Length: 294
Image (cartoon, rainbow, N blue to C red; front, side, top):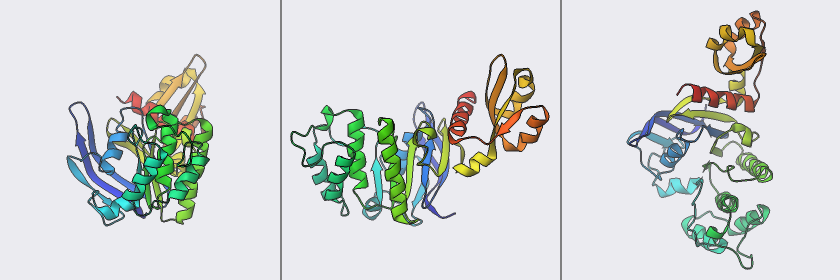
């Protein structure tokens, strides 16, 4: 598998949280979803990868050659969008465009204004444009996304890009992300974090599930859907089945859970029904597994 970014033993320690020993390989030419509940370590990992904070141990290699995130050449190739507070509160769209033009050689100002218009936020030509602090969380995120997509990059790293967007805008964002990959013809890649892969179902090709600062599962989404099954059976058989399920629910009549497909024959021998999970079922099942293992 060709990779765009790899990490080995990446560690960041805080007094009450540790991002521990992260070994990661991001496939080149695809969108990778970093999935986990609040506090799982998604933002910490992204901040380390983008050089916002420095790791205590481990190393990261970008594009198979760069190891110094502070390299000017590397920063030109990576577009980063934080979950919040990306631009100074007093800035308006014009300030953002001017700053981005100075900071990055391949920032397209016209594209920025067009993207702002497409995402229904102020651009440089907006009369009585509002500063960031007077805009909603969703509009601030849209402006930040317009700025990052207006650059010519090889890797986008987006922290919770859909969290403050309404369903329509999330759908537009997914389309924009797919377009970015398509335009790259296998040379461009995306890493984005989310609480639930179903929120941006059409955007993810590869998934990395995190919990308590560690990676608990990763792989191409279609491969993971083959690796696991959704199990449904009578509540009377629940006690015999729960030990083989990673996560599960039960009521008075039926149970349902996520399990390894390797156990499918055993479940079916006891009368349960096994099905290939949807992306949403896989995501929810893994998040429940993470919760239950705490």
